[in-house]
Image (cartoon, rainbow, N blue to C red; front, side, top):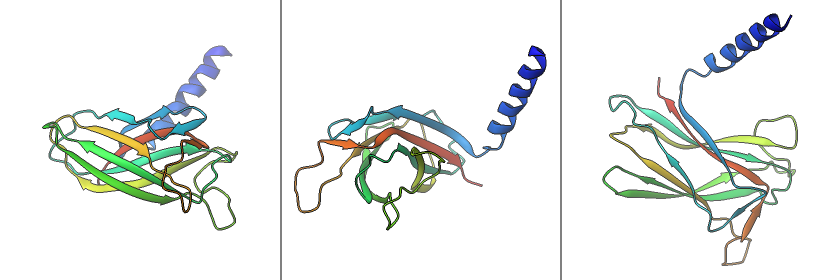
Length: 159
Protein backbone atom coordinates (compact mmCIF):
# COMPACT_ATOMS: atom_id res chain seq x y z
CA UNK A 1 0.00 0.00 0.00
CA UNK A 2 2.86 2.38 0.85
CA UNK A 3 4.48 1.91 -2.59
CA UNK A 4 1.15 2.62 -4.31
CA UNK A 5 0.71 5.88 -2.37
CA UNK A 6 4.31 6.91 -3.13
CA UNK A 7 3.71 6.26 -6.83
CA UNK A 8 0.57 8.39 -6.81
CA UNK A 9 2.40 11.26 -5.07
CA UNK A 10 5.28 11.04 -7.55
CA UNK A 11 2.87 11.10 -10.50
CA UNK A 12 1.01 14.10 -9.03
CA UNK A 13 4.30 15.98 -8.54
CA UNK A 14 5.40 15.26 -12.12
CA UNK A 15 2.06 16.47 -13.49
CA UNK A 16 2.16 19.60 -11.34
CA UNK A 17 5.65 20.64 -12.46
CA UNK A 18 5.29 19.62 -16.11
CA UNK A 19 2.39 22.05 -16.55
CA UNK A 20 4.77 24.96 -16.01
CA UNK A 21 7.02 24.56 -19.07
CA UNK A 22 7.73 28.28 -19.49
CA UNK A 23 9.26 28.62 -16.00
CA UNK A 24 13.02 29.16 -16.02
CA UNK A 25 13.44 30.67 -12.54
CA UNK A 26 10.91 30.97 -9.72
CA UNK A 27 11.98 31.75 -6.17
CA UNK A 28 10.35 33.28 -3.09
CA UNK A 29 11.93 34.86 -0.01
CA UNK A 30 10.09 35.50 3.24
CA UNK A 31 9.90 39.02 4.66
CA UNK A 32 8.22 37.86 7.89
CA UNK A 33 4.92 39.32 9.07
CA UNK A 34 5.78 42.81 7.75
CA UNK A 35 8.10 44.10 5.03
CA UNK A 36 10.37 46.77 6.53
CA UNK A 37 11.00 49.81 4.32
CA UNK A 38 14.78 49.30 4.44
CA UNK A 39 14.62 45.58 3.67
CA UNK A 40 15.82 44.76 0.15
CA UNK A 41 15.01 41.32 -1.24
CA UNK A 42 17.74 40.14 -3.61
CA UNK A 43 17.66 37.35 -6.18
CA UNK A 44 20.78 35.98 -7.87
CA UNK A 45 19.59 34.90 -11.30
CA UNK A 46 21.05 31.91 -13.11
CA UNK A 47 23.00 32.37 -16.33
CA UNK A 48 20.40 32.07 -19.10
CA UNK A 49 20.54 31.34 -22.82
CA UNK A 50 21.54 34.66 -24.42
CA UNK A 51 19.78 33.79 -27.69
CA UNK A 52 16.32 33.57 -26.08
CA UNK A 53 13.88 36.18 -24.82
CA UNK A 54 12.25 36.08 -21.40
CA UNK A 55 9.32 37.66 -19.54
CA UNK A 56 9.91 38.77 -15.95
CA UNK A 57 7.48 38.88 -13.02
CA UNK A 58 7.48 39.98 -9.39
CA UNK A 59 5.52 37.48 -7.29
CA UNK A 60 3.95 38.33 -3.94
CA UNK A 61 2.16 36.43 -1.21
CA UNK A 62 -0.07 38.65 0.86
CA UNK A 63 -2.89 38.26 3.37
CA UNK A 64 -5.89 40.16 4.69
CA UNK A 65 -3.63 42.31 6.88
CA UNK A 66 -2.53 44.22 3.76
CA UNK A 67 -4.14 47.66 4.35
CA UNK A 68 -3.73 49.36 0.97
CA UNK A 69 -5.36 49.26 -2.46
CA UNK A 70 -2.06 49.48 -4.32
CA UNK A 71 1.62 48.69 -3.89
CA UNK A 72 4.70 50.62 -4.93
CA UNK A 73 7.95 48.75 -5.56
CA UNK A 74 11.44 49.79 -6.51
CA UNK A 75 12.98 47.06 -8.65
CA UNK A 76 16.65 47.26 -9.62
CA UNK A 77 18.24 44.91 -12.15
CA UNK A 78 22.01 44.72 -11.84
CA UNK A 79 23.90 43.60 -14.96
CA UNK A 80 27.16 41.61 -14.96
CA UNK A 81 29.10 44.84 -15.66
CA UNK A 82 27.63 46.49 -12.54
CA UNK A 83 25.23 48.82 -14.40
CA UNK A 84 21.91 48.94 -12.56
CA UNK A 85 18.55 49.82 -14.15
CA UNK A 86 16.02 50.99 -11.56
CA UNK A 87 12.24 51.03 -12.06
CA UNK A 88 9.55 52.38 -9.74
CA UNK A 89 6.42 50.28 -10.21
CA UNK A 90 2.82 50.53 -9.03
CA UNK A 91 0.44 47.56 -8.84
CA UNK A 92 -3.21 47.37 -7.85
CA UNK A 93 -3.56 44.84 -5.02
CA UNK A 94 -7.25 45.05 -4.09
CA UNK A 95 -10.63 45.24 -5.79
CA UNK A 96 -12.83 48.33 -5.24
CA UNK A 97 -14.68 46.47 -2.45
CA UNK A 98 -11.37 45.94 -0.61
CA UNK A 99 -10.94 42.22 -1.30
CA UNK A 100 -7.43 41.24 -2.27
CA UNK A 101 -6.66 40.38 -5.85
CA UNK A 102 -4.54 37.35 -6.67
CA UNK A 103 -4.94 33.58 -6.59
CA UNK A 104 -5.78 31.55 -3.52
CA UNK A 105 -8.71 30.07 -1.65
CA UNK A 106 -7.79 31.24 1.85
CA UNK A 107 -6.86 34.69 3.13
CA UNK A 108 -3.39 34.19 1.59
CA UNK A 109 -3.22 35.34 -2.03
CA UNK A 110 -0.46 34.98 -4.60
CA UNK A 111 -0.04 37.74 -7.15
CA UNK A 112 2.02 37.42 -10.33
CA UNK A 113 2.88 41.01 -11.25
CA UNK A 114 4.21 41.74 -14.73
CA UNK A 115 7.62 43.45 -14.70
CA UNK A 116 9.34 43.28 -18.14
CA UNK A 117 8.89 41.44 -21.44
CA UNK A 118 11.21 40.26 -24.21
CA UNK A 119 14.35 40.57 -22.07
CA UNK A 120 17.65 39.08 -23.25
CA UNK A 121 20.30 38.18 -20.70
CA UNK A 122 24.06 38.03 -21.20
CA UNK A 123 25.75 36.74 -18.06
CA UNK A 124 24.80 36.70 -14.40
CA UNK A 125 22.27 39.27 -13.17
CA UNK A 126 20.89 40.26 -9.77
CA UNK A 127 17.46 41.67 -8.98
CA UNK A 128 16.82 43.83 -5.89
CA UNK A 129 13.22 44.55 -4.77
CA UNK A 130 12.18 47.08 -2.13
CA UNK A 131 8.75 48.28 -1.07
CA UNK A 132 8.08 52.01 -1.42
CA UNK A 133 4.54 52.39 -0.04
CA UNK A 134 3.51 55.72 1.47
CA UNK A 135 0.34 56.69 3.22
CA UNK A 136 -1.76 59.24 1.37
CA UNK A 137 -0.56 62.78 2.09
CA UNK A 138 2.55 61.64 4.00
CA UNK A 139 6.14 61.87 2.80
CA UNK A 140 7.89 59.19 4.91
CA UNK A 141 7.43 55.63 3.72
CA UNK A 142 5.49 53.00 5.63
CA UNK A 143 8.01 51.68 8.17
CA UNK A 144 6.67 48.11 8.29
CA UNK A 145 4.29 47.06 5.52
CA UNK A 146 1.84 44.60 7.05
CA UNK A 147 0.29 41.81 5.02
CA UNK A 148 3.12 41.03 2.58
CA UNK A 149 4.71 37.75 3.71
CA UNK A 150 6.82 36.63 0.74
CA UNK A 151 8.44 38.31 -2.25
CA UNK A 152 9.36 36.33 -5.33
CA UNK A 153 10.86 36.71 -8.75
CA UNK A 154 9.94 34.63 -11.78
CA UNK A 155 11.42 34.31 -15.25
CA UNK A 156 9.47 32.64 -18.07
CA UNK A 157 10.80 31.75 -21.49
CA UNK A 158 9.04 33.71 -24.22
CA UNK A 159 7.24 31.52 -26.77
